[in-house]
Image (cartoon, rainbow, N blue to C red):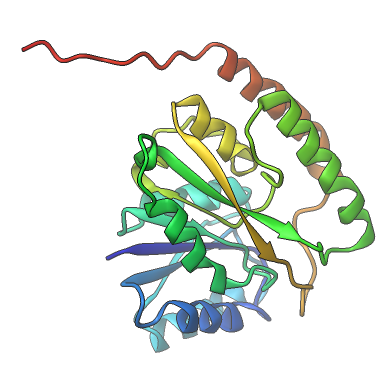
Amino acid sequence: MDLSVVVPVRNEAENVAAVAAEIRAALMGRFQFEIIFADDGSSDETPAELKKLKSQLPEIRVVALDRPSGKSRAIIEAVRRAAAPIVCTMDGDGQDDPKFIAAFWEKMKAEGPKAQNRIVCAHRQNRRDNWWKRQVSPIANGVRRAVLKDNTPDSGCGYKMFPRDAFMELPRFENMHRFLPALFIRRGGEAVSVPVIHRPRAKGRSKYGIFDRLWAGIWDLLGVAWLARRTTNPGVKEEK
């Protein structure tokens, strides 16, 4: 298998079928792949919709948390169970266009000394979120980039690709998905970005708001900065 696509969702019953269909259309015939929906304790019809999809499409897998535990935890549990060596994460609201997965793959497979420890990140163009998110997100991304030096203009975007094994060695904490570029760089890797088209949400509404993660995000930023300053990555020679 080439690729595991991990899609964290919470109460996205109206969107999961369309998201799955788009991913399959973009990847079919080009990759051997699976699609893992990571259900973060949904309380609507999402579990029923995912069960139906799983019965209809052989590529679909479902990892379901027994209660809402946050986007990062949902991603961690899905990546832990992923079958492929490369993982692509994308949101389940339909705003991420899966046609860019091929461009991510080209960046991921490019030669280089850090190829096994590289993360590819989407850089959303012409954001199609509501007015408040369009104002706040660039500020948050700018602060993260300035503090962490992560070379990533849109580190908060959930559309990313990375090696599974490298991800599983990262420190884990709530909201870690927003700091993945810095965490990869911390362990001696690199972060590269790909411009992508951002689409408006067709149905439903966001389940992860600005204010409920603001203060946690500040503490997380300080914590990741602390980790980065206290990390060394020496070369190691094996004695003959």
